[in-house]
Image 1 (tube, rainbow, N blue to C red):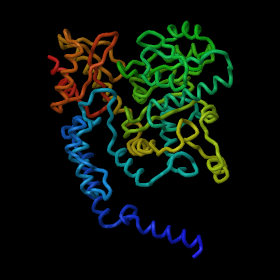
Image 2 (tube, rainbow, N blue to C red):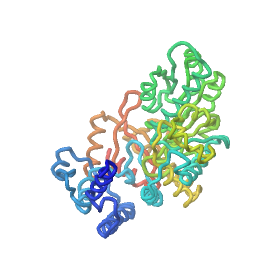
Image 3 (cartoon, rainbow, N blue to C red):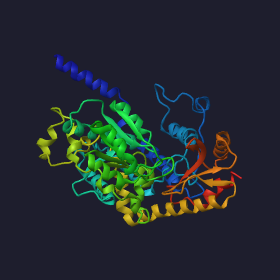
Image 4 (tube, rainbow, N blue to C red):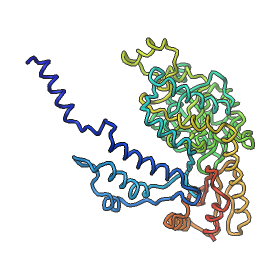
Length: 470
């Protein structure tokens, strides 16, 4: 036998040694699929009172309940599904639970959840137009809707990234690249942000190795920004405004900030990861005046646009500036231009990623299915619930509003309580499966905040938490 014959025989033997059921649809997989789909169907069909909150378990508990799961011969599909359904999933918190008020919750539509399964089944690579043209086209339809909400020009575009941290970082990398091209100045580059900016700004500054300059005040305004930006001078490569702060839900004065940035020729990025969804609500849209002037923008559909984790819409006023920074080149990557004629839109050119799933497709499915009015109505419902929650706080003699709510975060304090009291309440509600809230702080004083992004959350759900503080 020749060496080629030996190699062919070895490859054939190795292939035959593979388990047939790993990459073969047979009766066993058919039955497993039906059980898995039934589990998913039951979870999706849970009504308002049926969605479980879940509770975290310790490492020791999970070790005891699940045991060793990764073994040489495998446990079999049914046992793995049982472990997930009975042990692992209940040890996770359901962010769509109507009384999940901590951090920024989520409430994906039924259509978007099912679409996520469909997209996974199709095994689509979403980095380039060559390999995912249909999916990228659909994602760009969803991106266009968000760009239109913000009033960005028809030339604006971008991609879906994994989340706000990656979206912010990708935009700021592009901003610094353009700053270096236009202003090769001496000294360390500086990133200027408001006091209420997201923690990802600190992360971004460390990754980029730039100075983080913070403008004091609960909201960033042009008046507060102007002297700070003047003192930093041309070292400032970007200013970040926040449209919906995580802690209090406040929207910076984007219009006045845009005026100052325009005067200095400084890139303006808006982090609207949470609050940007409120642009869909006519009652809240005026709070975002000036956002049409940004150089880049992010909105997280997995927060308040009812999409599954994970999806961050990243948009640029001039996408060519991002492409000049992010596009990767090599002999095996540049072949797509030869095949498509270079006319396609490559999402990998607009953020810090190459491999990517088409994470914007579930949003597109849902948005196309229900229509934009349904989205506007759902956001308005959350805003109305937040306003009602604020009224309940005002009526409670032992509670005080921290700030007047602007979006759907209601922050309040309980008279006489310290941080330990808020933590005890949070633990008690979580242990009972009643609600999930976590304490926070503002101006050095502890507080409790509830964030409402689930249209199924009722005023009674809020009242349950408020009553527990009595």
